[in-house]
Amino acid sequence: KMKIFRHVKDKSFLSQQFSYYNASLNDCSHLAARHPQSDGYWQQDPAGFWIWPEDKQNLTVSPSQPKRGTSSDLSEEKDGAQTSDIIYGIILRIRNEFGDINDIFFQYMCSKDKPEKVVQEMVSANLVNMKDLICISANLQKLIDPNFNSKSITFPLKSTSPRGTPDEQKLVGFAQLSLKESSFPQTKS
Image 1 (cartoon, rainbow, N blue to C red):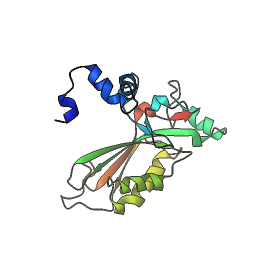
Image 2: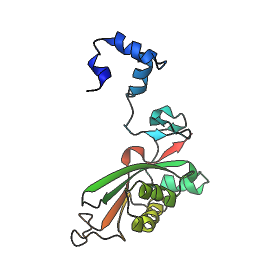
Image 3: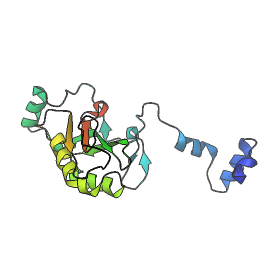
Image 4: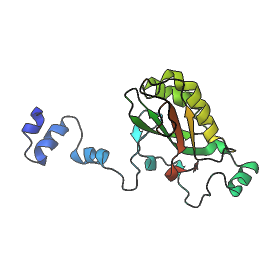
């Protein structure tokens, strides 16, 4: 219903309109094109621009890397491998105030992120209740601990829902943190 789209008949009209903004159609299509191997998750660089994970040259995926918690992985960490370079893909499953389950996907980089700061960002975005900040950050720290062998953890929340009795299976009064399989753990090169 916008005025500009009523007059669009061909590419030349759009090219003319975009020329006022010093941009060509090819420039605009490059920004909107999705990379073929991306997983669909955007990341924000330090300048504030959103980019695909494949655009970042410092992230690499190693398919031959062993699973976390195996004996070879633990021996590498004991031999002095830096755990601060590990990037985890983490999913927080939690019910919102309406009783719907939300899956919150995020990446946790051990060298830059702190559990309290990550959960504080979720609180400021109204994804998590302020009362649950401490218990979620403590369980996030437990999940990324190299000595913790499970890939998920379910824990009770401090904020209670008036929608029924707490149920761990249905995540009523509980939340679950789990490691995302596709990004388990990546190292920064």
